[in-house]
Each structure stands twice: as C-alpha cells, then as structure tokens.
Image (cartoon, rainbow, N blue to C red):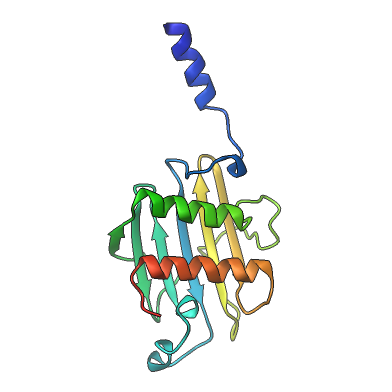
Length: 167
C-alpha cells in the first residue's frame, strides 16, 4: 500500500504538456486586459464587445472578476462578477490551449503584462496564463488579421460574455 502511494505521488509530479490535458489543471489562472485607442466614454458602448477596454481575471477557484471601461488596466483588480461552472472553466482552458497561447515559442510572448503599455491608437489584448510552474505573458495585437489577433478577440469576447457584457 505504501509503494502504491509513492508511485501515485511520483506520477502526480510529472509535468503533462497542455496539449494532452483536456480539462484545466486545478491551478489554472488567467488574466486578460483589453486596451484600445482613446475613446470618449459614450463611444465605448458602441465598440464591439471584445474591443471595449476591460480587465478580466479568472482565478483557480473559478471566480471571474471583471472591470469594463476606461481605467481598466493590468493593475486593476476587479470585483467578483461570478463563479464559473466547471464546464465554462474547461472551455476557457481549451480556448487558451487550442489558440497556442501556452506555447513557449508564441510570437507574442513578453516578459510581463504588469508593466505593459499599449501603443497609442492600437488595439491590444494582453494575456497572463498560469498553471503549475508555467507562466505565459503575451501581447496580442487585435487590430491585425492573423491567428494571434483572432485568438485575443475570441478570448476577450468569451470572457465578456461570461461577465454578462452585452453585445
């Protein structure tokens, strides 16, 4: 019995590549910040949902925090919006994983999102994704017509939808 416990403990410490995980690891966390060109507050409501300035945080306990509108940035710690269902957390995991955002050679990798400053007049979404010992910090230019930009748009839109942001 002791041998079985040691073997199971050893197996649990082996890192599994994210592409082999169908569901999110228990410690999966996500923070997404949507930056855009300067807008009047009245104009923001007219923007498509994934382009509205926002900060979304998904914690490992499935709590979603959201801040929408001007002033939402990487230093914003939004209020609790809701607790996600397990299937919603799994959908977010697959969205991040399948978009290649956990790839250690992703072209949008940056050193950190906390000090990132979006260039003027550009639409950018930053992503922090974490699980186990893995941390990814990315900048995704959502004004580009490429896979990276599309991933940023899809992720921001899904998080906005989960935060009950209307289209």
